[in-house]
Length: 607
Image (cartoon, rainbow, N blue to C red; front, side):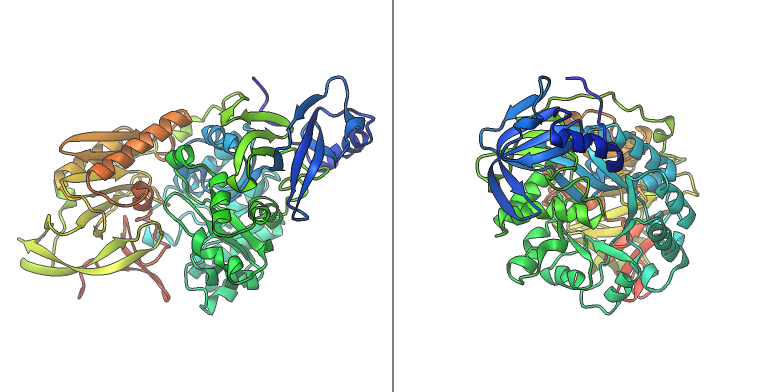
């Protein structure tokens, strides 16, 4: 069925029509009869209910809505199925799926996600406000209730630690927040030390957000009992997804913040954080379920917010409570509960029907803004595809060809052993560990021992801003044969990152990625797996199914090379994110994040 994407008018404009339709003077466009209503406002399951919809909004909820039925009214008999509000993702980076907003919508609508709060700081780090603008415009073309946040950290810290493709400061934040009500606030403030210690840029961005009546999201990775968490909260940042323990949730809620519990592809935090409620007894009103980063293959094989809600229920959360954490709590956090997050008169008709046991979160129909858009796991609606602007392409400006010599690490000794700081990955978590390791040195050059699980890592600036580069060592990749992976998906500056144990393969892989204008290449002596990402070097312009298949190809190639990590590519893509402890590599060097702040440290110890 061909349809316009959505018709979401401001509530105030709709009031005369809504009241007339609720009386029955105007007839409903859609009736859903005989549902078990998941009332996330009252926390009840109400059997034998019906819902009347006029155009995009709900006008009547009750046992009898017959007075709203007209000759043209579409009637759906739910046969006793559950009706719940469409699921909302309270913190998500669409770019992390490697899909455009259009294909993201096609992927998640059949899974019951009807809206979300999207921090487009990946494309913003590449293209600045121009990138954010086209992401917003494309999201508006879909049936999703898509709310965008302006990126707070472009770059993620001060420029001396990394090179990014753009700059966003207080003036740019103010401009972006004027683009419409769906520009909902400031994206995760990753430079939390800057906030705590009064960095003028960070404080100015938060001020611009508060002045606009919008909301600021957080990213605080110091421990929850650190004295600086209340300082961070005092700034106006009142939501945070960097919760990995129950204590993290409890301390944030006690300070009036919204604690976002994350279940992404590679970050599995819900099982631990949900204990703040199941064991600690904390009120759940300020607890939200989110995905943060979820790959296209995870969407295809596991799901989106339906998967996260199901997982929370499996940890002992009551089903209705889990649904609240993915609907009304999320809407209230961003101040839009008048429009989304519940099935009540006046709200947008973003409704999902679920079959079987509610705890199974088995979505069989998705209604967005009063229109059936998906049924039995398949999209039933289509809309005119948004045409991406020219500026979205040809963004990889490496400026030269790489050679094996670019990956030679010079040691401070001529022969023997040297000690250096390695980045050790932690499976299913965003943090890394600083590990001191001994490496062999011959003629001043580091030699990797095949028996030791170490790889080289290189970051090359690719935005055409000076061509900086740096080298480091990573532990925990697990390659058991010569292999290299190169990618321009390297949060958040998205410079060209290459990881491997063979200099020649690393150079070849990096050059292939640069030549295809962004993406991921996994290369061994046995073959190659390619994942082109030509939109900003971080997203594909292909259909969801193609993106998922290519993403799976990279995952399989990593496994075949010996990498044991769950969702390894997503974990590797964060090794250049210089605001998460303990150590990362940028194009400027090895960056250490500690309780005292962020700074560049020498690769070799004692220097």
